[in-house]
Image (cartoon, rainbow, N blue to C red; front, side):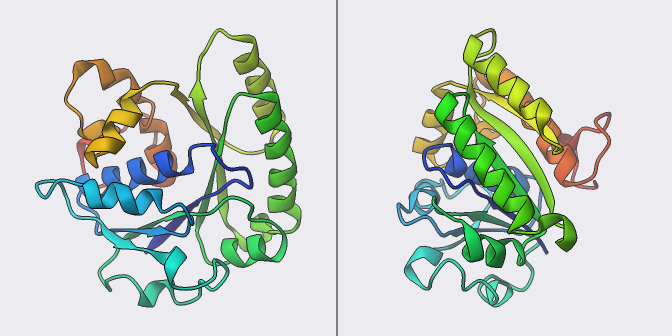
Length: 228
């Protein structure tokens, strides 16, 4: 079972977008997938309730209703035993001991960052806490960064690129600022489950993320086969 948490101390950075899209991608590729929603807003849970019955099933856990965010040690007992991939939508404001407790229970951390001065400043402090307080490197937890809601060829995006270049962390991909993600959410699907040709560019943005998560060379097409 691989456990992947999407987390940033600042709210509104797109954690749910990334969590739900990854969950749908894994499920569509044949993985027994669970989604644990620790965000008090419950957005991932709402998305699951909208999911059409003809789409691959994703097991949902409304974790925000059951126990505190840091009480995570029974994750493996709260999902079906055959579960292969667990996606965790973390709440905002996770810092200090709570952050350390969280990262001790996962294999991978994904950090979404928005292209704005406020978000870049917040991400700087969060990543520092993650490396120092969370001790992810000593725990062997992998950390990757995703730029979210981006508009390339803008000054603020260039500022984000410069910031990400200073990190000693993998910069996995940039997701466009587009209504396609809103429309996908409203239908309970992931971006790659939409058949409109206009979303093809957005679908391709996720290939580097899946390749990195599954340790696959970029020359292999993750979305084409289950055997990674």
